[in-house]
Amino acid sequence: MSARRLSKLWAGGTREHGQALIEFSLILIPFLWMLMGIVDLGRGIFAYNGVGQAARELARTTSVHPCNTSASPCTIGSSPETAATFATQRVLVPGLGGTGSTTTYACTTITDAVLPAVGCPSGAFVRVTVTVPFQVITPLLSMVGPATLSSTSHVQLP
Image 1: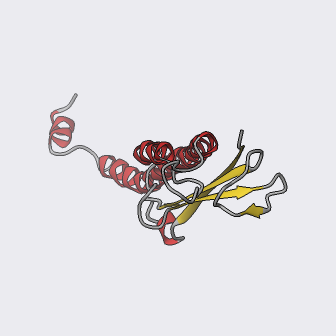
Image 2 (image 1 turned 135 degrees about the vertical axis):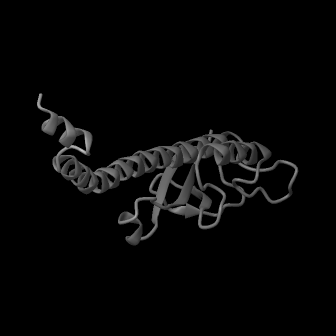
């Protein structure tokens, strides 16, 4: 290799090295947006599955223990077992029990007609609806606004 060519490489190389840096920076931003979108999609699926599981667990517990037996009016969803299940699900589901989330208990018939929540009869159904807000972290998707994840579960009282 000639001395002139060696001095050129030693002095900083060719201009093509800067071109690779610019191409990398142009590709990096869309790649990171796509990566953050994939992470948001995974978070959304995890939260949606958690909301569905919370509704099922609360409905199952409420069907076995519909109300607090020590209280005089038997209001559905007021049992200590239901409260313990809610506390467990609150730890597992992001946003459950926070601002904007709701959990409703209703006594219904097989046709989903609402019965009085006090003194729900045997053979009726417990309907539990869990709603949790979900906020994405991807910059462009966050402009759409927060989403609400909701799930409803029905279980028959024994």
